[in-house]
Length: 141
Length: 141
Length: 141
Length: 141
Image (cartoon, rainbow over the protein chains, first blue to last red):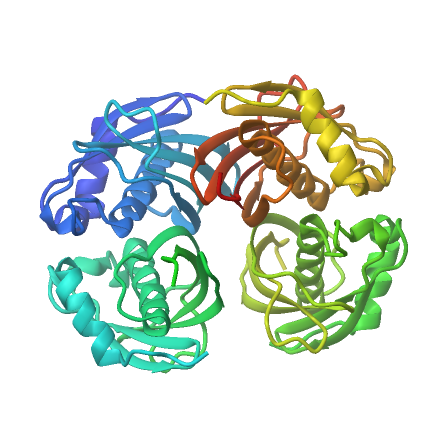
């Protein structure tokens, strides 16, 4: 499926509608939007780290949820009303140092539900740190 | 199963090992620990709210994850090494105003895995705002 | 919420619409329907057992899915069109001998989605053998 | 990761240890084993169909669970003791006619847990009918 918004357009919408995601500092960026796919970059700061310098589980969940929203918005257009109904995440291994990339792929974009598959890995790392699937309820279009 | 730590003891451990959970202000408190159960209270601040005053999905996921950790710790004792391996959450309805309570129940406390069921509701509200199940890998005991 | 169908009415609908569930022998019965709840009984036969006499994982998943459908049907009435969109199951311990009971509770019965919590245990057993949550897409009512 | 068993070897082990999976007729075949991956073919018969000729949800769950087991066995060798601890499945769309292929990929093969991602689609179909993630507890090696 072809996206209908660019990464800049999606980020502008997030900035306007959900300024809180930047409350602790600007940590999210949209790296790319492609057919059925989006990549969101996360630059953790001290708020997101656990002892030993590992990114916390809730930070990974927030990243998966946001990146899933990004790929959906990019393909349905600027409607702020999509809401998460389910998120399932498996934590696989501690990510290596550096930025994390969440690569999300639309598995389904239906009339009522969108289902997204998200892998999270440290940049340049082949092994996933976490894998999530998320379902969003989407407004009738 | 009988708990082996009190709420104060668990919170002292969290304060020591995971001070980051209080980084944006002190929002979590342990209301009660009972056999197989723990209740964690969450007082959202502006960082956790979405447009319209709703608590954000990531805040609910973080609450479920923390409350699951609390009930496990309370029953296995002061080991910081339990790590989440899976979390599944269903977002059910917008919570009413006021504090949220996450009531977690041990479904299993095995040699390697602990599985927890968590309901999240606004205080005094019968209907759940969210329901999660979480699995933690626990150290050999 | 009050149910609008009895157990006999739900079973009659299943017999008519989904005769295949009885293909390997009649193994499911509806024990009870109550507000927000249903209990489905499963009497495993050789087809459902694994080495050592344990009920297989797929049999437990099928039981959870069916029991979730039963509690939804009982509360929305005789529409065959509800379909599972998500099922998450944790396998907790080998069930003891005898019938299994799946106790399902409506967490939400919305306009578009119903979410159900199901515990599965051997009859008379306090510990769950498995715990599932299921989401069904329900027709507009 | 390199597999250590061929498809024929895995199927021989299944035939010996889990003959029940063929009880209603021989419906599963292993199409291929590759590094980190396995493809299992499912030829539904009348037992697996719902009104309208759709493959039932429980049949898809059983297929995902079996195919996840196949990819794990192929990579850890002939130990029958791996057991499913969690399975999460999203039902995406009715599959087209013909055989279903479940393509499973190892996301993690750890000391205690293996996590697998499975897509299920009708042969020749690009769109997934269902997507599952499964966690198995694996014996120490």
